[in-house]
Length: 83
Image 1 (cartoon, helix red, strand yellow):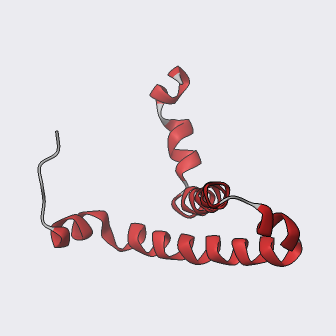
Image 2 (spheres, one colour):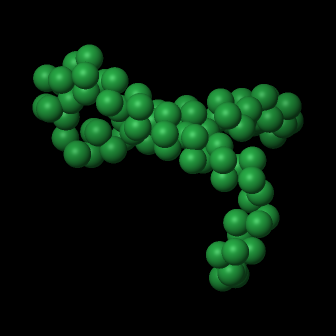
């Protein structure tokens, strides 16, 4: 189990690249959701809060993977063949 750590230590260990990618991913997911609402307003209005949260999560994760090149890292990992 990971012990409780100081917030500043965790942020330092993550580094600027990860923190900047996370911030950019939030911005990207927000932009995607606004586009979704503008393009399909009736669908967005009918969506449950759970459905909207799932949609936002998927878009956030899409941006994180793209910005941090996680697909490349995963495909290079021999353990990924086990999945």
